[in-house]
Length: 265
Ligand SMILES: C[S@@+](CC[C@H](N)C(=O)[O-])C[C@H]1O[C@@H](n2cnc3c(N)ncnc32)[C@H](O)[C@@H]1O
Ligand SMILES: [Mg+2]
Image (cartoon, rainbow, N blue to C red; front, top):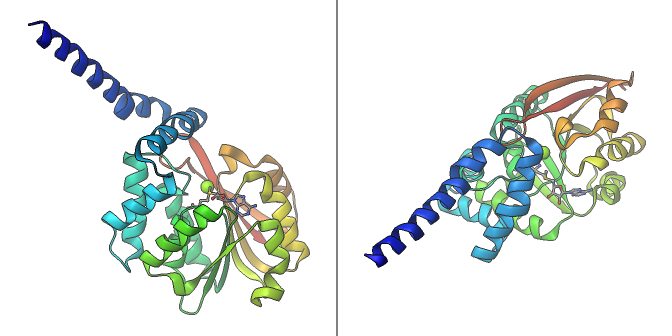
């Protein structure tokens, strides 16, 4: 009898803890961007790293290898979204803002694209899958561990012919793009690296002559974590025509959005 009581209290306690971890806390934090980051980045991610002896990028790659079809980029995107919605939040642009990204890529129909911030290659695959034949997407990532994973995700999606992943910091590589890769100008730039780099890198793109009349800048997370200096610069600048796409922080119900800015020359 005592055993049964002990068993009941242990499993009962474990069930409560599991319900808190799996449903109760996620359903609360999803409305608050800051709480989402605290819960997932500092608690869940660290716990999963210790328990599984792996990193988040490795787990995302695992989800792709398990659930996506080789050579089918949309199945790769879907596998990552399912993993990040149901298991652990990650900083991919995500499914909701991803649809806005898709529509801008389709509208611009770019031949040359620059992506700042690759992480695991989620948005890289999204963009590359929509590019016309012979188009090229350059994506910059300064974390070597992320770059190793992104290469495998990109290859699994079968879009490696369209993608040039460059390992290094944006501030170092933007000035070398013309000389090193023969780029004339970018038709589309997707800004999704650390937010304090949005403004200096935009000015660098201008200074290096990498923007032409009609080039489109699309900046993610302008509300959260936020890029106020970038927004002030781009919205108050007569050389840009800018508009905001209201949305939500990836995999949550917290407010976020994308800023699309056309360079007028
Ligand atoms: C938000 S994640 C990118 C997410 C990705 N665009 C997606 O939606 O799937 C930002 C990434 O940018 C990288 N990063 C941050 N600052 C950078 C910089 N100055 N140069 C290159 N990579 C940078 C980080 O290591 C991180 O992997
Ligand atoms: Mg982002």
